Structures are given as structure tokens and as C-alpha cells.
Image (spheres, rainbow, N blue to C red):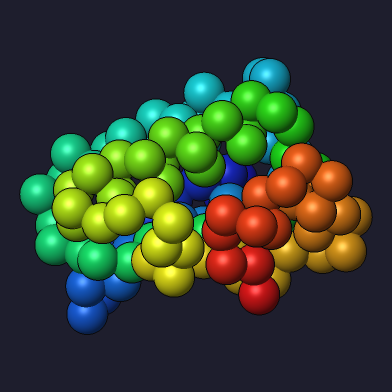
Length: 111
């Protein structure tokens, strides 16, 4: 069975891969993986969340994305208004709608 969450870093870009549903049960694994990225010692200035295999994300999953955003901007010394260093890629329409309804589309680059 494939791991639901993983990350890789190449050319100062971190890619966090996720699949399935990110909800109250699975968000702990999501948070653990994101925390492991920050404590890995690897150098990166951009985080891309690869959501092409994500079916759903709940508020607990959204909280992990906010944690990653805050931690990344703190690490880079960037202004909160800058949203080009954290990207959500490949989200299906149903997941994009969650980002739109919650206002995440105004603070995170969603492609």
C-alpha cells in the first residue's frame, strides 16, 4: 500500500504529495509529514502541495496548510501577503471549491 503523504525536495522546491481524503483522522499524518519536511534540514524556498490524488480536505487539513504557510514565511522572512512561495497544484474541482469557499484561494496560489 502506498503512503498517503510524502515529500521530496529538489532545486530548493519542496513537493508534498498527498492522496485520498485529508480529514480529522488522516490530518495527523499530513501534519507529521509537513513537520518532517521542516525538520529535515533540506533547503527549500517554495512548497508545492501536489493534490492531484486528493479527494477531499477538511478544516483539520486546511489548518496544516496554514501551519506550513506560517512556518515557511517565518523561515524565509517574508511578508504574510506574499503567496507565491506556497502553491496547491492539481486539485480536483471539488477540492478547489473548498479552497474558494474558505477563502484560501486569496492567500495561497492554487493552480
